[in-house]
Every structure is written in structure tokens, then in C-alpha cells.
Amino acid sequence: MTPGEALAAECARYTAMGWMRGTSGNLSVVVDRDPLRLAVTVSGKDKGELTPDDVVVIDAEGRTDDSVRVPSAEAGLHGRIAAVSGAGAVVHVHALAPVVAAEHWPDGVELSDLEMLKGFGRQAHETVVIPVVPNSQDMRVLGDAFEAGFREDVPALIVARHGVYVWGDDLYQARHRLECLEWLLRFKTETTRRGDSPRT
Image 1: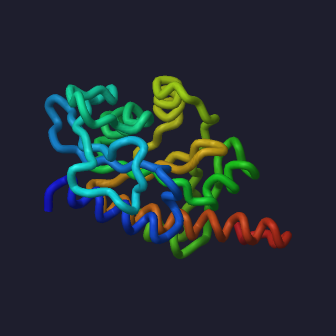
Image 2: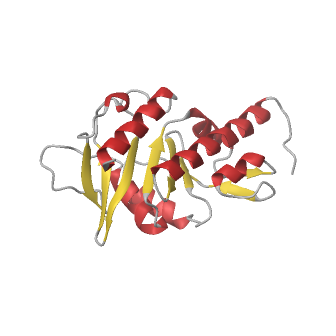
């Protein structure tokens, strides 16, 4: 499967889940390491209708030599995450649970004693803090904020009032981590809304 085919298929999946509404969200996959190059979804298209041609190759700064296809405005952050983390794929969606969680815990969302943490690559008994950074239209600002709080064992970043980034070795690992993280954050926000106190 080509990078374009894989990205289009993943976008269709996330759109069906309601996580890439309208033209929102973007996905990328590393196609070369030296120098770093990523295939990223193009800007301004319905993510549920992408074709394998609706991707563009960018460098680590989010720049492209393509004179026709325009990368997402957030492509630079994809490049920064891939460069710093060593990830092979980065997914950015607008699932609601991460954004709501960031409203409650703007300094980071703590998760613990939850079996689903195993699907996120951690153990159920561990305490995991998902970093939250303020939103910005400047990808260098977001990239600096990401890097300042980066931990190798937490492959996710919530951008307040915006969305969530999750990464992995490939698109499938990133997807599995994202699906599990969304469940964890939904549990956290739902139990908080009801006034429950999750066990510590």
C-alpha cells in the first residue's frame, strides 16, 4: 500500500468515527529519514473523500516543493514530532474527549489505574500525564511547547480548544494508541462530570 492509499484509508476511518469533521484534522507518515521527509494529507479537503493523490511530501519544517498540492497548515508540527520522537506516523484529529479533558486539566491530564492504558503502551497501574499546550497558529510555537514537555513514554499531545496529536511507529500503532487514549479521556471526563472520584 502506498503512503497515499494508507493515509486516505485512515482518514476515511477517522471521519466515520466523527473525529475528522468537515476538512479538519491531518495525518502523516514518514517516507524518508535522512533527510526527514513525510507524506501529509493536503489542506482543505473533506477527509472522508481523500484519494491516494491527496497527499504531499514535506520536509521537517513542513515545507514542500510541490507547486500544486498544499499541505496542512499544521504540517510543520508533524515534522517536529516525527523528528523529536522518532515516530513513523503522526495523527491529528478533533475528537471531543481530549479537548474537553484539556478544559478541566490545562496543566496535563492524569490517567491511572485503568486497564485501557495497556492499549496506549503503558501498564494499568502506572500514572500517565498527557501534556496540554495552549493553541497557536504558529507551528514553531506549538513545536517548542511540544518539545519542552516531550516524554518518550507518552506518545500524545493535546492542543487546548483544538485537538489531539498521537504518534507511533506506523499509522496502525498510532491509530490503536489514539483509539485507546480517546476512551481513557472520555472515561476521565465522564466520571468527573458525574462527580465520581477515580481510584488512585
